[in-house]
Amino acid sequence: MLEDCAQNMIADQYKGANVTEFSLVMNLDGFNAIQHTCPACLSAYSSFVTAYQNYYPGYTHGITLINTPPIFKTVLDVIQPLFTPRTKKILKIIGQNKKEWQEHLDKEISREALRPEFGGTKKD
Image 1 (cartoon, helix red, strand yellow):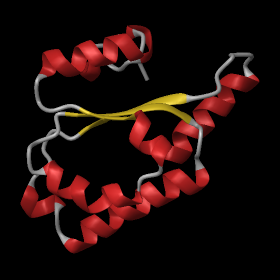
Image 2 (cartoon, one colour; image 1 turned 180 degrees about the vertical axis):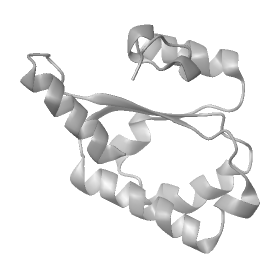
Image 3 (tube, rainbow, N blue to C red; image 1 turned 90 degrees about the vertical axis):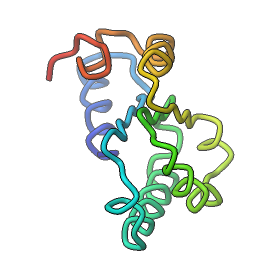
Image 4 (cartoon, rainbow, N blue to C red; image 1 turned 60 degrees about the vertical axis):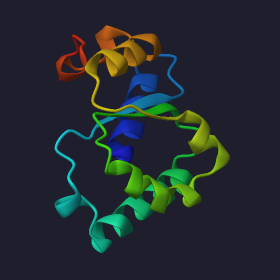
């Protein structure tokens, strides 16, 4: 996922776009404790955070997690000690209130750059 985002950004730069960062939006709808809080899952989340911070520092303008259920706080408590100060600064976690996360996304990202599931008009 991160590599795809970085490659898309680089491709846009080659086309002449002035793009230096990307915004990452992750929809956690369907996240549940039984399937997503097992030890192997927690290890995968830790690996994702570590890879992001080691190989893509400064690539992201913001990371927004939407539709986060209350149980996600448990996962966050486990992986948050791995976060660098910059990751803590750019990470926004929003619950399942669509109005709240839509308002946040509208402030951060143009509708033309958002896919329809996030309230945007971008087509793949």
